[in-house]
Length: 122
Image (cartoon, rainbow, N blue to C red; front, side):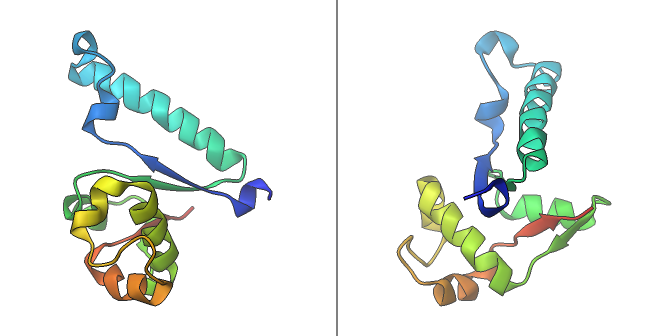
């Protein structure tokens, strides 16, 4: 398996941005996010396909749709394996889905319109 065959699911949320009680200010969180992004960029440069998630659900999708970042929303066919990986690897998300980790891809395709997935394009 080479780097281009591997998918990494990176969950970045509020708790991952606060490294300690002493480092909880906005500038500290910015520094933590910057460090995380450098690591993610290194993975992409190494050929990994990276899925970045955040715990705020639909709000992130709405913000991304309004932004000028180069992104595109993927179709349900493309979203299905990403959503399956997400539900399988991030158990806390399961109550928000009608499918289970062992569900087949057609079930995840049906679920896709409720859970937007975006691709970063360059």
